[in-house]
Image (cartoon, rainbow, N blue to C red; front, side, top):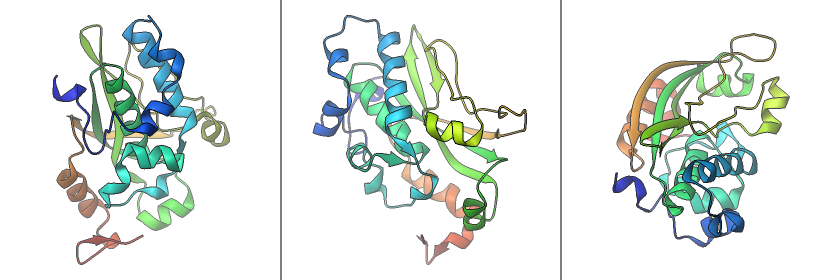
Amino acid sequence: MKKSLQGNGFFSIDSPEIKRFIPKSLFSSSAADLEIAVALYYEVRDRIFYNPFKINLDFADYSVSNVIKDGEGHCIDKAGVLIACLRKMGIPAKLGLARVKNHMGTSKLEEKLKTQVLVPHGYVEVFLNEKWVKCTPAFNKELCYKLGLAPLEWDGKNDSQLQSFNESNSEFMEYLEDYGGFSEIPQELIKSLMITEYPHMFVNGRWQD
Protein backbone atom coordinates (compact mmCIF):
# COMPACT_ATOMS: atom_id res chain seq x y z
CA MET A 1 0.00 0.00 0.00
CA LYS A 2 2.86 2.39 0.82
CA LYS A 3 4.31 2.02 -2.68
CA SER A 4 0.89 2.78 -4.14
CA LEU A 5 1.09 6.25 -2.60
CA GLN A 6 4.64 7.16 -3.53
CA GLY A 7 5.86 9.22 -6.45
CA ASN A 8 8.73 8.05 -8.63
CA GLY A 9 10.37 8.87 -11.94
CA PHE A 10 7.26 8.01 -13.93
CA PHE A 11 4.48 8.90 -11.48
CA SER A 12 6.10 12.19 -10.50
CA ILE A 13 3.54 13.47 -8.01
CA ASP A 14 5.47 16.64 -7.13
CA SER A 15 6.11 17.80 -10.68
CA PRO A 16 4.87 21.29 -11.64
CA GLU A 17 2.81 19.71 -14.41
CA ILE A 18 0.81 17.56 -11.97
CA LYS A 19 0.23 20.52 -9.65
CA ARG A 20 -1.11 22.57 -12.59
CA PHE A 21 -3.15 19.71 -14.03
CA ILE A 22 -5.15 18.97 -10.86
CA PRO A 23 -7.98 21.50 -10.52
CA LYS A 24 -7.26 23.93 -7.68
CA SER A 25 -10.72 23.33 -6.28
CA LEU A 26 -9.78 19.74 -5.43
CA PHE A 27 -6.80 20.81 -3.32
CA SER A 28 -9.09 22.86 -1.08
CA SER A 29 -12.02 20.46 -1.23
CA SER A 30 -13.38 18.60 1.79
CA ALA A 31 -14.87 15.97 -0.53
CA ALA A 32 -14.38 12.28 0.18
CA ASP A 33 -11.67 10.34 -1.63
CA LEU A 34 -14.28 8.70 -3.87
CA GLU A 35 -15.53 12.05 -5.16
CA ILE A 36 -12.00 13.32 -5.74
CA ALA A 37 -11.00 10.12 -7.55
CA VAL A 38 -14.02 10.29 -9.86
CA ALA A 39 -13.37 13.96 -10.63
CA LEU A 40 -9.74 13.19 -11.51
CA TYR A 41 -10.82 10.28 -13.71
CA TYR A 42 -12.84 12.63 -15.91
CA GLU A 43 -10.06 15.24 -15.99
CA VAL A 44 -7.62 12.68 -17.37
CA ARG A 45 -10.13 10.95 -19.66
CA ASP A 46 -11.06 14.13 -21.51
CA ARG A 47 -8.13 16.54 -21.15
CA ILE A 48 -5.47 14.10 -22.35
CA PHE A 49 -6.28 12.79 -25.84
CA TYR A 50 -5.82 9.13 -26.70
CA ASN A 51 -3.12 8.38 -29.28
CA PRO A 52 -2.38 4.65 -29.79
CA PHE A 53 0.51 5.43 -32.14
CA LYS A 54 2.53 7.14 -29.40
CA ILE A 55 3.58 3.89 -27.74
CA ASN A 56 7.26 2.93 -27.80
CA LEU A 57 9.91 1.51 -25.51
CA ASP A 58 11.61 4.79 -24.65
CA PHE A 59 10.36 4.77 -21.09
CA ALA A 60 11.36 8.39 -20.55
CA ASP A 61 8.31 9.23 -22.69
CA TYR A 62 6.09 7.52 -20.09
CA SER A 63 6.80 10.28 -17.56
CA VAL A 64 3.51 11.92 -16.63
CA SER A 65 5.15 15.34 -16.95
CA ASN A 66 5.89 14.66 -20.62
CA VAL A 67 2.41 13.25 -21.23
CA ILE A 68 0.73 16.32 -19.75
CA LYS A 69 2.98 18.63 -21.79
CA ASP A 70 2.10 16.71 -24.98
CA GLY A 71 -1.61 16.67 -24.14
CA GLU A 72 -1.93 13.17 -25.57
CA GLY A 73 -0.82 9.62 -24.94
CA HIS A 74 -1.63 5.93 -25.19
CA CYS A 75 -3.53 4.03 -22.51
CA ILE A 76 -0.51 3.50 -20.22
CA ASP A 77 0.42 7.18 -20.51
CA LYS A 78 -3.06 8.26 -19.49
CA ALA A 79 -3.23 5.71 -16.70
CA GLY A 80 0.06 7.10 -15.40
CA VAL A 81 -1.31 10.64 -15.27
CA LEU A 82 -4.35 9.48 -13.28
CA ILE A 83 -2.16 7.44 -10.92
CA ALA A 84 0.10 10.42 -10.23
CA CYS A 85 -2.90 12.70 -9.63
CA LEU A 86 -4.51 10.22 -7.24
CA ARG A 87 -1.30 9.67 -5.29
CA LYS A 88 -0.78 13.43 -5.08
CA MET A 89 -4.19 13.60 -3.39
CA GLY A 90 -3.28 10.79 -0.98
CA ILE A 91 -5.32 8.09 -2.73
CA PRO A 92 -3.52 4.76 -3.36
CA ALA A 93 -3.35 3.80 -7.04
CA LYS A 94 -1.61 1.20 -9.20
CA LEU A 95 -1.06 0.54 -12.90
CA GLY A 96 -3.03 -2.41 -14.27
CA LEU A 97 -1.91 -4.16 -17.44
CA ALA A 98 -3.89 -6.45 -19.73
CA ARG A 99 -4.01 -7.96 -23.21
CA VAL A 100 -7.04 -6.90 -25.24
CA LYS A 101 -8.47 -7.33 -28.72
CA ASN A 102 -9.71 -4.29 -30.60
CA HIS A 103 -12.44 -5.49 -32.95
CA MET A 104 -12.83 -2.04 -34.52
CA GLY A 105 -9.22 -0.94 -34.77
CA THR A 106 -8.20 1.52 -37.46
CA SER A 107 -6.72 0.03 -40.61
CA LYS A 108 -3.61 2.16 -40.08
CA LEU A 109 -3.00 0.73 -36.61
CA GLU A 110 -3.71 -2.83 -37.70
CA GLU A 111 -1.37 -2.44 -40.66
CA LYS A 112 1.39 -1.35 -38.32
CA LEU A 113 0.84 -4.00 -35.64
CA LYS A 114 -0.35 -6.77 -38.01
CA THR A 115 -2.98 -7.80 -35.46
CA GLN A 116 -6.08 -6.55 -33.62
CA VAL A 117 -4.44 -7.46 -30.30
CA LEU A 118 -3.23 -4.56 -28.15
CA VAL A 119 -0.68 -5.34 -25.45
CA PRO A 120 -0.08 -4.13 -22.90
CA HIS A 121 -3.28 -2.20 -22.37
CA GLY A 122 -3.08 0.06 -19.32
CA TYR A 123 -5.79 0.79 -16.78
CA VAL A 124 -5.83 2.01 -13.15
CA GLU A 125 -6.57 0.30 -9.85
CA VAL A 126 -7.72 2.70 -7.11
CA PHE A 127 -8.13 1.88 -3.42
CA LEU A 128 -11.48 3.30 -2.30
CA ASN A 129 -13.74 2.28 0.58
CA GLU A 130 -11.41 -0.57 1.59
CA LYS A 131 -11.25 -2.24 -1.82
CA TRP A 132 -9.42 -1.94 -5.14
CA VAL A 133 -11.59 -0.64 -7.98
CA LYS A 134 -10.59 -0.58 -11.67
CA CYS A 135 -11.10 2.26 -14.11
CA THR A 136 -9.94 3.01 -17.66
CA PRO A 137 -9.40 6.67 -18.61
CA ALA A 138 -8.02 5.82 -22.07
CA PHE A 139 -10.69 7.01 -24.53
CA ASN A 140 -11.58 10.71 -24.40
CA LYS A 141 -15.22 11.49 -25.13
CA GLU A 142 -14.53 13.14 -28.51
CA LEU A 143 -12.89 9.94 -29.75
CA CYS A 144 -15.75 7.83 -28.37
CA TYR A 145 -18.33 9.89 -30.25
CA LYS A 146 -16.26 9.54 -33.44
CA LEU A 147 -16.17 5.75 -33.01
CA GLY A 148 -19.87 5.48 -32.19
CA LEU A 149 -19.22 4.64 -28.54
CA ALA A 150 -20.75 5.86 -25.33
CA PRO A 151 -17.89 7.38 -23.28
CA LEU A 152 -16.84 5.09 -20.45
CA GLU A 153 -18.24 6.37 -17.15
CA TRP A 154 -16.95 5.58 -13.65
CA ASP A 155 -18.67 5.94 -10.27
CA GLY A 156 -15.71 5.02 -8.06
CA LYS A 157 -17.63 2.06 -6.65
CA ASN A 158 -17.61 -0.44 -9.50
CA ASP A 159 -15.03 -1.57 -12.04
CA SER A 160 -15.22 0.39 -15.30
CA GLN A 161 -13.17 -1.14 -18.07
CA LEU A 162 -13.26 -1.08 -21.86
CA GLN A 163 -16.54 -0.99 -23.77
CA SER A 164 -17.39 -4.46 -25.07
CA PHE A 165 -19.83 -3.15 -27.70
CA ASN A 166 -20.42 0.08 -29.56
CA GLU A 167 -23.76 1.86 -29.84
CA SER A 168 -24.68 -0.31 -32.87
CA ASN A 169 -24.15 -3.39 -30.67
CA SER A 170 -21.07 -4.46 -32.66
CA GLU A 171 -18.25 -6.01 -30.67
CA PHE A 172 -15.62 -3.40 -29.80
CA MET A 173 -13.13 -4.49 -27.11
CA GLU A 174 -12.44 -7.91 -25.62
CA TYR A 175 -10.24 -8.68 -22.62
CA LEU A 176 -7.97 -11.65 -23.33
CA GLU A 177 -5.64 -11.68 -20.32
CA ASP A 178 -4.99 -9.61 -17.20
CA TYR A 179 -1.47 -9.25 -15.80
CA GLY A 180 -2.44 -7.58 -12.52
CA GLY A 181 -1.50 -4.31 -10.82
CA PHE A 182 1.91 -2.68 -10.36
CA SER A 183 3.09 0.14 -8.11
CA GLU A 184 5.71 1.15 -10.72
CA ILE A 185 5.93 0.70 -14.48
CA PRO A 186 7.19 -2.89 -15.07
CA GLN A 187 9.56 -2.11 -17.90
CA GLU A 188 10.83 -5.64 -18.52
CA LEU A 189 7.32 -7.10 -18.60
CA ILE A 190 6.14 -4.46 -21.07
CA LYS A 191 9.12 -5.07 -23.34
CA SER A 192 8.66 -8.84 -23.17
CA LEU A 193 4.97 -8.62 -24.04
CA MET A 194 5.59 -6.32 -26.98
CA ILE A 195 8.45 -8.43 -28.38
CA THR A 196 6.23 -11.51 -28.19
CA GLU A 197 3.18 -9.87 -29.79
CA TYR A 198 4.91 -7.59 -32.33
CA PRO A 199 8.24 -9.23 -33.28
CA HIS A 200 8.25 -7.45 -36.67
CA MET A 201 8.44 -4.09 -34.86
CA PHE A 202 11.86 -4.87 -33.39
CA VAL A 203 15.29 -4.71 -34.98
CA ASN A 204 18.19 -5.87 -32.82
CA GLY A 205 15.91 -5.67 -29.80
CA ARG A 206 14.93 -2.05 -30.46
CA TRP A 207 11.36 -0.89 -31.22
CA GLN A 208 11.01 0.66 -34.66
CA ASP A 209 8.42 3.41 -35.14
